[in-house]
Length: 108
Image 1 (cartoon, rainbow, N blue to C red):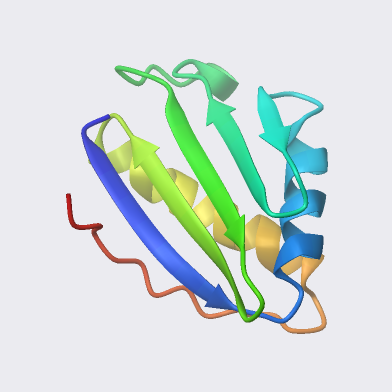
Image 2 (cartoon, helix red, strand yellow; image 1 turned 60 degrees about the vertical axis):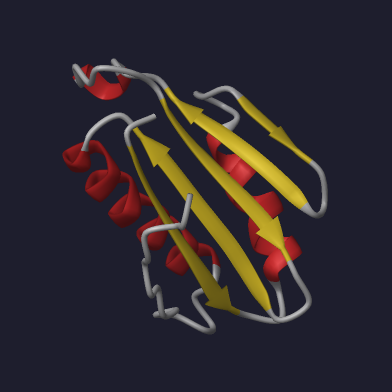
């Protein structure tokens, strides 16, 4: 993976939202999850895209935040997934939406 971003999204319902997101995406995408951690693979050709490689979104539920990490092949793929994750999370967390996403580049 060439580019990554992380965000800690404040919420007391991180596990609930992680599970809702993973259950939503498991209908069309490769997904693995527990109550505390989930991964979703977005294939490089999903929805007609032509990215160099697949992208991986990882969710970790904590007591006060949902940690999100996106590993993508190129910047445009990363940006698209940042928007998709934020939109979907806000849809499930409608009582708290819009949730703040402060995307950062992770240290290697």
